[in-house]
Image (cartoon, rainbow, N blue to C red; front, side):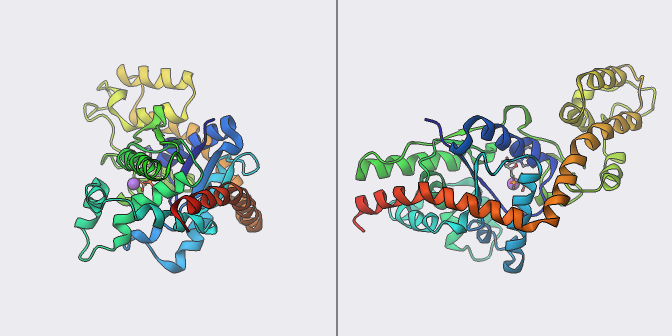
Amino acid sequence: MTRVFSGIQPTGEPHIGNYFGAMQNYVKLGEQYGKNALYCIVDLHAPTNPAAYQPELLAERTFEMALANLAVGLDPQQVVFFVQSHIREHSELSWILTLQTPVGELERMTQYKDKAQKLESTPAGLLMYPVLMAADILLYKADTVPVGEDQTQHIELAREIARRFNHTYGPTFPEPKAVYAQDALRIPGVDGQGKMSKSKGESSTLGLFESLDSIWNKLRVAPTDPARVRRTDPGDPEKCLVGDYHKLFSDDQTILEVYDGCRTAGIGCIDCKKRLMVGIERTLVPIQQRGAELRAQPDDVRDALEHGAAQARQIAEPVMDEVRGKVGF
Ligand code: ADP
Ligand code: NA
């Protein structure tokens, strides 16, 4: 049996990188695995980043991230969709796994090192982050974790943690493996400064709920293949973020036409961007409409999360009973 688990950080507004790199994959895996696909908004993780955590905004951000996932088509009746802090067992299992995890292994995590380096005083929570993440996955005995490449090391550690527990207390947890969204690993930012990421600010991102005017204003000035200095210079669409975006948003015929147009200088960059806007509009308008409907019915979102928590609890409670028994509590 395959059981999928993925944690979703309740940070800021999701962008098209999150959508193509993660959210769309959640929907697809949900259609495949139904109630064996668990998606959790990991609000307990958020405060490990003191720079990003604001207590008065956390509940709102959790709500917004839930809404965004529902708006792109995640079906809370089909999958198990819930909030981490609604299930107390995440914290409890995290503590039990912490007891066995060598500090040295945690200190080797590159994300920890990067983040700790920027802080004057490092909260222990930042060090423990990957243990809580392992607990999130193992609490449901999940074996399949759709994540970005940046999480590979954390998943490897979760496997180690599962192995260590099984060795001490007998077979309990499967060793989870990472799976990646194959075709959209790394969507470039619209500013041309590498990967699209909210940590780089709004100049990098095209938000899922951003107005089409605002998106066009960013796209209009986005850098294209630098070889195209004049309108008559041919370009290479494979070296252009607009070319990359066409592959995400446009139909096959449009992609053929604009790629050929770029290579032959038959189409200018502004026209190519305008044709991209057609695909962006076709993709984002329904998502934005669904988002607006849900925002007008916030109780529907909260009900969906409560329904999800009840189902998650049905899996988590017996696992935690088993763990307590083995550990001696
Ligand atoms: P951000 O980098 O904007 O802070 P997160 O780290 O919260 O985004 O990522 C949430 C999910 O979206 C992860 O699964 C991550 O792999 C995916 N993701 C984020 N940015 C991109 C991108 N530019 N291209 C593809 N996937 C992305
Ligand atoms: Na990130």
